[in-house]
Length: 395
Ligand code: GLA
Image (cartoon, rainbow, N blue to C red):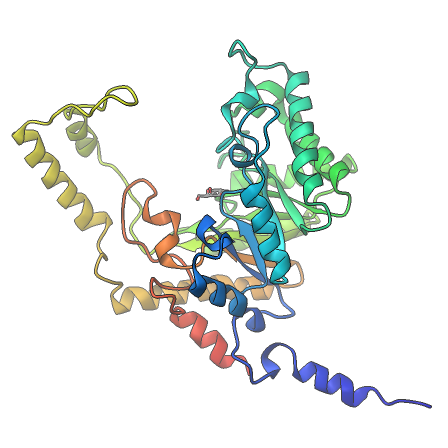
């Protein structure tokens, strides 16, 4: 008997993405274009925030761990692994059918200090560091083999001018630490995608070296699937054309591109003028860790208050909420990036926001305590206007 499957296909298609009557989320909006992800913090991983659980289920199909898979979290000392939270994070993804990214294997920051030194506190040899890297990567990647789509193998190794960061990895191993990390990750899970991830990826100097890095890895027969453009951005940086030029350059070098840590700060960038620095210098400094902060004189306290008031007026202007015109500009700017991602959706594979709601963004405490508005959902878990707009157009 010949069965005509067309009607069934039509029904199935109408049940996917924007074709259903179910409440729609961002994952329906971008269905067929790219994955849409969010970074999870500890509270969310532990299901201590039911509102977050619902938002994640409705809007996202991908997750990354904000902190719990980093070196210092999973490998605090030699021979000691602490996978409790990382395991729960991975289970969260599996239980909710979310694509999981592993973040990150090799990074100069949030790396346990023991990793680079011997028992006497001297920097280890190249051979020892290579062995330690291999053991770390094999253990972490091996544990989640088959559960994680891809890994940020190396994070933030290249500076804006295109030079290599002077990290302990680089000091001890030179440029070779990167191919070595990619080789180990591939051996540990041959099916996992492997990524190079960095911030300010739109800078021409960094772009050129990353392109060279991709070509070099490929020439050696090593696997690299994509680069992650972190995309911690502001209202006046980066220039969209530079950002697009980097997307094009990475694609031309033969990899996919992802926006891996998207947040758009609504606040002015903090800059310290020389006179403010000088004024700060006259205040007493905290002593060694554990020692009390020296008392300030009344005069110093008054001077500090007035500096803080001036600082907040300039750099923390929206503590009572975002003015309508700033919100409008913020939403317009997010849409400019989303339109770019859509334009390249053949090779643009994931957009991940670095956090769920404005309340939990690292931006609120980066360099100073401020009230920022960088993410897709506000402090009341309400979707930002651009999200509402995209969903309303998703018919
Ligand atoms: C970098 C890292 C992230 C995170 C942010 C700041 O971009 O890749 O893991 O630490 O800094 O929160």
